[in-house]
Length: 255
Image 1 (cartoon, rainbow, N blue to C red):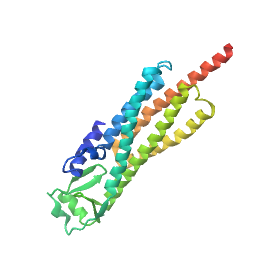
Image 2: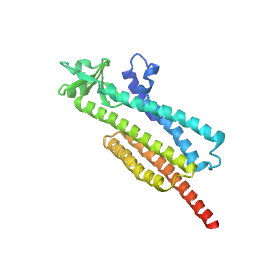
Image 3: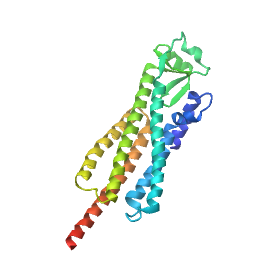
Image 4: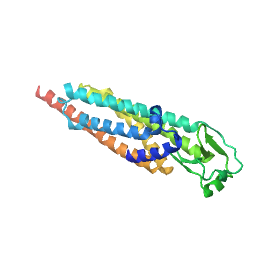
């Protein structure tokens, strides 16, 4: 989360030269806000699926966890909107015409390196950019080559896909936990959950691989860590389900 905040702080200096208004906060710090909300949600899932007993997950404790979830989901949805807004921002471009890009060296103009990295134009960079089609992000002094812009927009789209995928996964997890608490997580409901979620996790894995190939190490390592974290949440749910099934089996034998 701290690394995301560092990267987004540096990018926001170029994106919002006149300062960041509250309405643009999510556009500037979507990944940082998203990470903080997910950390809180992960802790709640760990409490629900492993740490606390079924009897404890009632009354004030249940309502307390529900409030934490609502706060988390609020910021996660807010961050999802931020990913969409950021994608639209970097996609809003027009052709940039200039006789000599090197004339921009030392000015406030920057160029796109990747989705959240805009750096000043140097002598070595401008020589390369002179021979390439250029684009400008509308309303800014940020320019990009066609290849850099394509890579950045694709990364932005992957962020949207990744965020949407995670929302689907936690929606299913919420249903799993609810059914488990009400002793209904059996038969068809359990099978459907176990069929759908591996497919959704596979999409997340594909996103991580894409980030790895693109050299987005922070995004790759972040995705890998979250997959590992939710592997343990899934393991908690599996063990919880097995314990409940064993308890039912023993109850039937005793009757």
